[in-house]
Image 1: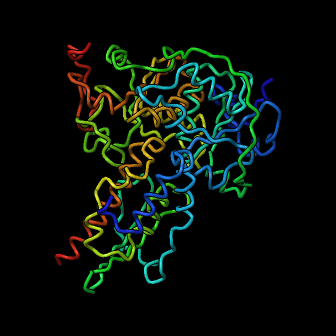
Image 2: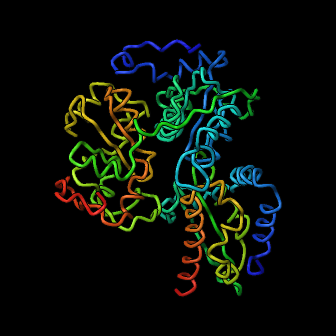
Image 3: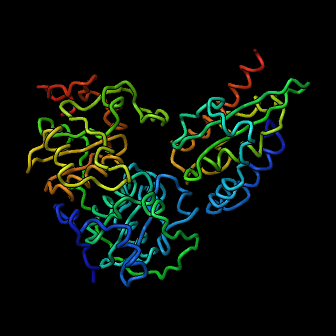
Length: 146
Length: 304
């Protein structure tokens, strides 16, 4: 887990420290805390990439800054009737928003498995979260190469 | 004692009106003795964001499926689950859920495997309840555990396994997946990830009737007349047919199973829950690609 940015590492630890039954409660809490979109993005659905692997609509915007560390900003949009998807998005938002591009690229692709939710959630769900992370990393790589 | 059957013109036209209740019926009967309302969703957290007051959650993945074998819980597992939810063999169980009751119908079908007698769907599901501005609660209902007998699961009548589907070839099959899945263009639902089927297409001779055709805009079931136009007209089923329905893992086809069995009154309808994630991976079974239904193969595959 040494590859994880510190904030994401703390979240993974938070999940692994609570009993399995409470992990869903924790995910629900995260789903409530997903930050609202800033107004400059809220009215521009065309700027978002859809994560089609998610079972419910999820859209994301990845912005890589021009600063030395290429600070990454993440924005997610998912409807309230999709709390599991929102919860995943919120974990990535809290764990990765504001991190350096390289530290996000170093996050292992199977990081969602580390949250200890694989028994409670169907394989499709887990793949949705893995896809979210994969798309974030792909967008960062593309923007760095541009 | 079962609760009274809801009587209205729409339901009276169905073969088994006792299998449906409306949102207003539920609102009026909440708290009634012997009534247990269950929410069955695709999204495991949705119930916790607010549910019909007094309703309990039932989860298809963690509670109805066996954790190890690809199968449903057994008689003991089901009895323990029912007891923990305060359900007795005599309870009237009303199930509702997200996405036009797709997962609710799946739960109802599993209840039927155990012969639970009085199990109904709330027409229109969770979305209709919310659209009507009805009360939602985040309270965790207090449940008094009950005794529920251990009933062995009876698969034969309403569940088909792969060898039975092979033997069924030549009799009506309904494929309830999307058109793209049916033709083999994709092996998973639109907007859903690949779910590991090695081959795309459909079972030879299966008619394509995407499950959601049976649902109206508000998530309620279409009228008997409309359903007959879809299944007897377009899909060519005849009254009395022995039908097998399938999808990807058996959840969407539970919705169609409910329509054929309880609303249109087909006596013999089975859900093939192995569905495409089994058929599309099985060695030597016949598959048809494209829009045509395809012929029943003479040899019926090496597995027959």
